[in-house]
Image 1: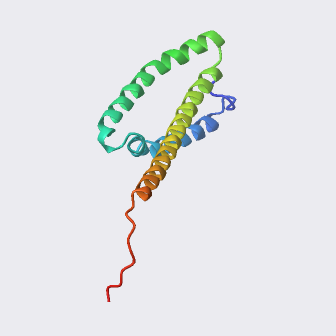
Image 2 (image 1 turned 45 degrees about the vertical axis):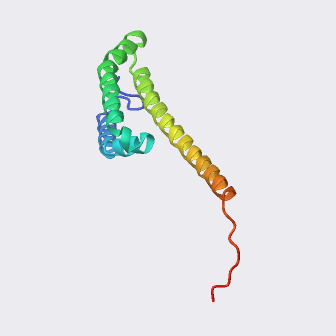
Image 3 (image 1 turned 180 degrees about the vertical axis):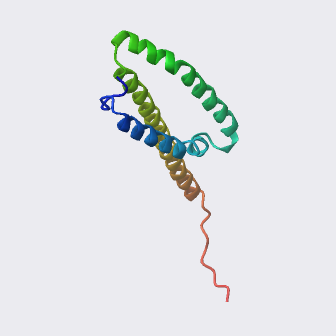
Amino acid sequence: MGMPLSNGSYAVLAAVAACFVFSIGVCMPMYAVTLKACVGVEHLPNAIGWYLLFSGIGSMLGAPVAGRLYDLTSNYNVSFIMASSSIILAGCIVFVKLGCQKWESKKNSEQETNVSSSFRIPMRDRDYS
């Protein structure tokens, strides 16, 4: 049974594989940039290490879990749907994290502006001519 919506067609599977390869080729360089935006430069080496650790765990456990799902359902559709759902969930978590960081930085900059404006020393008008 191959993949959902393919109906066993080799052309559809080849097209999906080509799209996947193109997408992963575009996404792989973005991991470091996204990690830098999430954790900052000072924590980037640790973040890349954690990313590689969890990526490896996912790669190691993905095939056995997909096989177990196939054994339980006799259908690969559930495996593909679970894998896709986990990738979509991971992307949503990153977007929420980045949104929270932008909101916090905006909130902090507004507070700094309010604090700095309250401590201004009034300047008197002087004629320097």
